[in-house]
Length: 483
Ligand code: ZN
Ligand code: CU
Image (cartoon, rainbow, N blue to C red; front, top):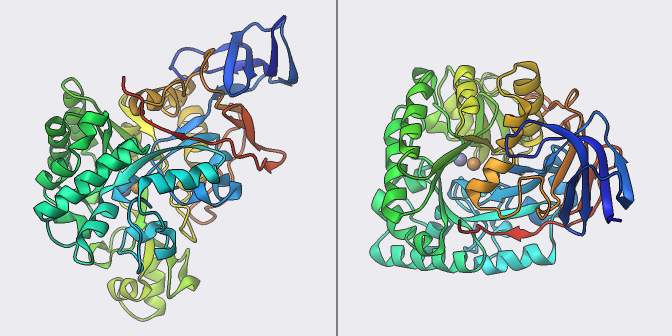
């Protein structure tokens, strides 16, 4: 008779592949799923009766800025575990804690991860060691960031293209990071200090991706008027290096571009027939990043997410702050720096079109360091399941789960993850499909989601609705597996 560590019985199994649900049991021994189906003849040390509830692969957050949160103890990731997340992709938008130590406060947006104290890793290997020494509740899949590399190679003056010698140094560091456990290279060409980086610089620095089979991931140069040109640039970089490309938090930004997702999706879809390309997205019509006074638009509402000199303004509308200070929004923004902003710069119709498209996967882009965070940090996955799937019917549950699990794992090369099958890792989430929903709002952004009952990473329970974080830290650094 089969004996397991854990059997979850009579669950609605949603296997992560997009296939229709079935009812059955699932057995776990050690860190792996050992059996799926009718396990009435098997027994286990612990049995969970899951009638009426759904069991899915643990969710993979395809886009995070959890680089530091994965190192600071289980509570730091309650925002993710309470949503059913078991794996996070860190190092996005050109921002990563390795491989550059900082003596001074890093330039924005590197400071989204914290001040100079956070940047304590001179190599990716050191970061990987820290993770191994003090593991989190989730698995970590890491990219190395172009901006972190630039800060190390170019010193204070980043507002220029890199020289050949600097490019060579960054290129070597990318190769080193990939050898030490990073899975790809990310850029944030949208941001001022990186805007001056040419396409050729990116291609040269990213060159080691080809031999290592790594992924090129980008917060593109422009997500507004020139979004199509930016997609073309991204595709070109992928073709020239010879690797898959990944577009981060795809959107059409600013009112004059609302509706253009029809064009951008057609462009990405056509390209996908020729080369490997994918994208992530979050389910909200507002974004969040560092506050950039010269990019403010009076018609787009802005909420202050953090401010070093004026923490009392966290959570306030920038327009109110400006009124209170008897000044315009731009001067108010200058006074708040360094600071972060949540900006309503998208059209809900685009958000839905981009989410529903077969090429999309879900990534929160949550920023744990924000004092008054964008609600995506606590709500992304239950919001897709509860609001967009159950309530609005935009996607069926199987498809929604596929975009958080099997599809993501396949595209990022996370071997034996994102699916319910014997032999796969036991990253699991048990939830109530009739009740699951986000509760975090722009006003109250840290309310945990409802309906997530229990979460396991590598076979170990990390979160329970009744208990919160279990305190277990079974997460591992996982790296891209070459197909
Ligand atoms: Zn970004
Ligand atoms: Cu990001």
